[in-house]
Image (tube, rainbow, N blue to C red; front, side, top):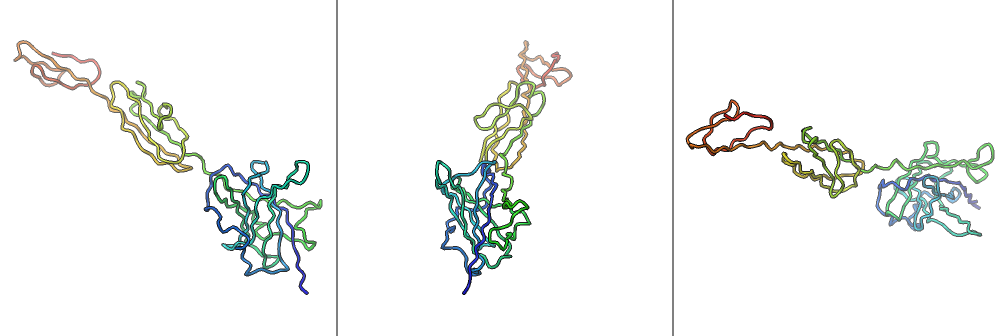
Length: 275
């Protein structure tokens, strides 16, 4: 007669669910009918009691799931259990029955599904736990005090919001009040770094007297991007027009060429001599 043994392992999942680190689509196939039992050995099943934490607090998201895989093969899956025990105390656990081929099987991967953002998160397992620890008394590893050793899973660091840094030239335009902004946001000084969101945005520049304003720029941002752009203002050179009498007389600016009466001449900002 074959005896079935079940190991129970207390599993504490430390998750940073505020991040948007997408690694898969919604788990339509995460149900017990799809658990791979081709390597299943009835004498080596495992029951995992999982509690999920976010920034040190217990996650209590109805509809969330935890699943266990070896390769692409689903070995166990459980829904969040927020059942009330008594006096307002809740389980807030995931209970997984895992199909194992032996007590020394390795290569387990754990994933968490968050229905709030319809995202699956891939969890990092410490190398010493890729082969789950078992003990012959049927409960999982204990430390010297008889307490279950925490099984810690962590998410990779979340990608950061993208940023845009814009430098404005020339410095004279900056002194004259040149600035830039993202979409309909506030104006920013040259060299400022501004956090934005993923997607397509427009960088525009403030009009400044005496300069041609740079054309607006379209930028597409992804999470984690650090974009730099430059906006160049072009000075609008002054013009001089002289009408002389008699009209056959001529005039010039500084040491430039002679101009007929009524001619319009472009020059530079500053002090000049007309003769």
